[in-house]
Each structure stands twice: as structure tokens, then as C-alpha cells.
Length: 190
Image 1 (tube, rainbow, N blue to C red):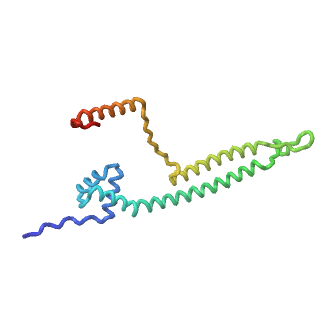
Image 2: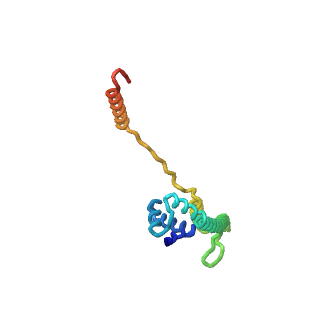
Image 3: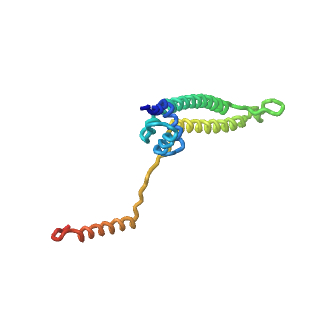
């Protein structure tokens, strides 16, 4: 009696897990992913197995890459924040200095009492720079919040019950009690 060929050995777990993960990215339910994988020759695949394989693959391959990406992005955002802080400090330093006006020939402009005339132009430009740096710092903070999930939207479910809904519920209750009375055995009262 000839022995039948041995069933195909299951693919290494990481290959099965990677395939399950790839198929799940299309948004298919686990049942459909399991059917697809069985059609591709994978053995002993159920929706529960798919769920386990996806978790395993995420732990082994996806999450370490995601953590590495988050770490690199966080470091980049911190470096950017440091540069913005330095630029902001320089802009404030320019704003706080006393600027004097110069004539077209390069001499300091003085008033009739021989006092130097203040030039507010550099201070105004510095304030515009401050605004720009503050906007960029806000965007930097928003990027950090997004990176760590602090800006995630909160989903709230609200159920509105109108007077009509209450009236319908009361009517259904009355009909149910009437049906219970009508179907009760003789001699038993509700």
C-alpha cells in the first residue's frame, strides 16, 4: 500500500504572519483573509489564527519599526524646536535693542536738540520674526502631539429620545400588557 504524499509543511510562522498582515491591510475581515490564505496553500488557518498571526507580526516586525520611526521623528522635532527657540531669542534681542536712525549718507540722524532719533524699523521687523517663530513653534508642538496621539479625536455617542419615541414606547408597553392579560390562563390575573 503506497503512502500518500505528506501534507505540505506549514510555512514558517513569520511568513504566515507577514502574509496575514498584508492581507489584513486591505480591510478584509479575518474570515476572508483565512479563506484567501487557505486558497494560497496555507494549512490550519482560521479567523482566530489570523488574529494571532497579525498580533505576532506586529510585535516582531511592525512595532519595532514604528518605535524607531517615532524616535527619529521625535529627535528631529526636538532639534527643530531648539533651532526655533534660538531664533526666537535672537529676534527678541533685536527687538529689545535701541536702534538709531541713519541718514542716506551714513550719518546718525539727530533732532534739533542734538538727540539721536530712534529707528523703530528693526524692532517692527523683529516682532514679525517673533510671530513667525511662534507660529512655527506651535506647528512643532502640534506635530509632537500628533506623533504621540495627544490630538486624537474623542468619539462620543449621543442618543436623542423625543416625545414621539416615549409615546411609542408607552404604547408598545400598553399593548404588551394587554396581550399578556388576554393570553393569561383563566382565573389568573396580572
